[in-house]
Amino acid sequence: MVVVQQDRRPFVASAPGKVIMFGEHAVVYGKSAIAGSVDMRAYALVVPHSGHAVRLVLPDIGVDIAFDGRRLPRVQPGALAHPGDVEALLAEGIDVPDGPGRMAALVFVYLYGSLVADTGAQGFSICVRSLLPVGAGLGSSAAYSVALSAALLQLTGQLHGDGASEGDRRLINGWAFQGEQVAHGTPSGIDNSVATYGGFLEYTKGRDPAPLQSTRALRVVITNTNVPKSTKALVAGVRALRDAHPAIVDSILDAIHSVSTTAAELFQAPDADDSDAEQRLHDIVRVNHGLLMALGVSHPSLERVRDIAARYRMASKLTGAGGGGCALTLVPSGAPKSATAEVAAAMAADGFECYDTVVGGAGVSITYAVGAESIEAWIGKQSSDPVAVFAALPAATIASLAPSQ
Ligand SMILES: Nc1ncnc2c1ncn2[C@@H]1O[C@H](COP(=O)(O)OP(=O)(O)O)[C@@H](O)[C@H]1O
Ligand SMILES: C[C@@](O)(CCOP(=O)(O)O)CC(=O)O
Ligand SMILES: [Mg+2]
Image 1 (cartoon, protein in one colour):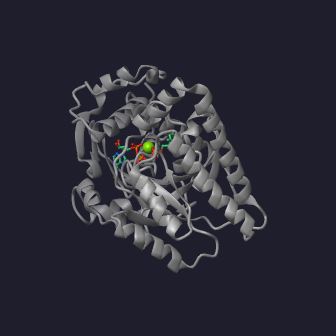
Image 2 (cartoon, protein in one colour):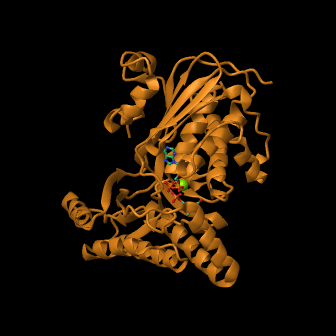
Image 3 (tube, rainbow, N blue to C red):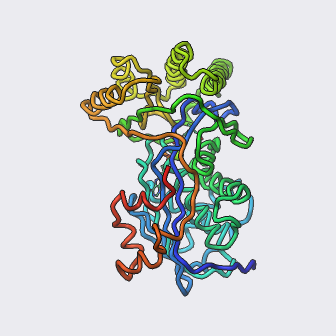
């Protein structure tokens, strides 16, 4: 048994969602993709207490489970080779309903079993709230997984710089990737990398993410079609198409790779105001969407978003897994604020929801304070049940628990 040093103070670990600008799906096959963090995050409040009870509360998706932490065995490295073994962990007397809550609980139980079980750590409550839309292509699963990994590593004293050092980030990212594997089977790792490191980056599976210094303002309108989708099913659909038509699908994936590498050059071009570069970016947004459509991951609602943007001479593409979820619209450099407001209003008139987001903010973060006050004092003042307080906080207060962008 590895006995850990435990800090008993409550804290909040948080991580952002992401927007994939170019390269989704192809990135699963080792091609390049470009993505940045968005200013919506998942927040995990951890409250250590005496005894061995462990409580997981996920108010956004209706999960509230408790179990005796001593009953869960340590998960052996390599357990992910047998996903059934991970599912079997839930049989240890933990009652979780089917649906999205089950997947989120499974990710927690896997990370708990790997990082906390058998360390002699005492009990705790953990409550995760997210300001990201769930299952819409903005990486809510990865933000959840990164916030959880950071929370459990910090709780058990396995981080050395409160999540900010290079070593801490590498550790958090590695475990969050495993959390994403529990949820999706074969993630590329781009979502958890953006949620961990934040910023704007180029990602190729198996390599360290490469930060991009864009000379161009990263202005996008994100539109949520509110059509539910499953990342797992969409990724599986592309795999089935590739198995049936390997040569055709591989050439589509190669074309997407060229789109991403061209985009990286354009974003970093010295003359950001060059109208030729502007036009080329517009073109490749359109081309990237067309290639994704050929892979079968578009949806009529996403095509509708593209039609509306085209009326304002802007280019849109799906972002994330597709099949519904979100689209992004590239805002041309120099476009007045009124232009983005107009296009967003036109989309809202069609029943879509738009997010005015800043791309490229902070990655994972751990905080013990709200302003000048400790979280312990801040939450303790409001009620004797910190989880109930946190679960009911308004979004604006939750958002104050992370570094400002
Ligand atoms: N606020 C949240 N609380 C708990 N689990 C969440 C939360 N947000 C997302 N998740 C987990 O992530 C899953 C959605 O992930 P996914 O289908 O990959 O969509 P995306 O990552 O694009 O939002 C949910 O079913 C749930 O398991
Ligand atoms: C389709 C894919 O490229 C991105 C999926 O993103 P999301 O789960 O829809 O946010 C899959 C992956 O990279 O693992
Ligand atoms: Mg996801």
